[in-house]
Image (cartoon, rainbow, N blue to C red):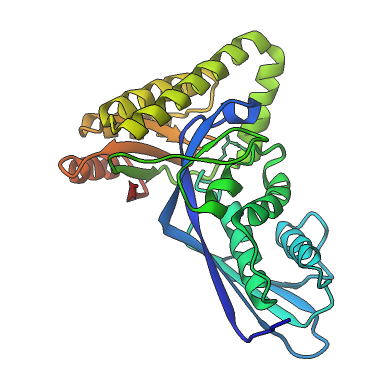
Length: 314
Ligand code: MEV
């Protein structure tokens, strides 16, 4: 077993293009990686007898694996990765994590941090894991962050490719005929996925038929969205984003701040705009072109966006 010195690994953020929430109920969804933001994990040998230390730089926290409760997501991903590799947890190691992905904004920060840790540990022990194995390991930790995750975040982040995702099915990768640009705008409001997902579940239990119908419509949009992307029909992608947003409003996951940004993007000339991720806060995404990107960016900032990232889907 090769044990090197410092190992560094990264993982990107993600946005959901179509199908959030409905994907939890078995409908298809599309997500794409966002490489402008990323999580980073390093693993290096620690001093003898120190055991495993986890340093969460952004939170200014440092703790030993032994002290952490089983509900600690970082502990969970470290233990399950070491068990999977088959090396046990008795090591002297320092694991440091940091991230430029804002937390609880629908950009997959939890899944990205876990993915970076799995990658760094697997490099350290010289046991490189496949994207599917990484995704499966991260999915278990996602349950701690999210309660009942569909698995889309860990999949798109571990594979780092646009994915057409259906819960409990093998990942489907698809081709993007004409690359396109997304503006991702942050409301600045943290909204834990767990809360929005459990609120939707409660509402679904109360009005099952209505919600199932909406989820099915969202699923159809995701499927049409994939076809439009494969054919390079960008205007259709934009129209479908608007339609998806309307359905997300109906299930109660939008907010005045999200509405403000969606409106601003459309006024700025975006071909379509919608909230992305769990909603309530977090980010919106808008489909822009080289011609409209600066104007949409400006309109979003004037409407209160705390940050705007432009990313290419290709
Ligand atoms: C979270 O990125 C997207 C949701 O659909 C939850 C999930 O799929 O687990 C809201």
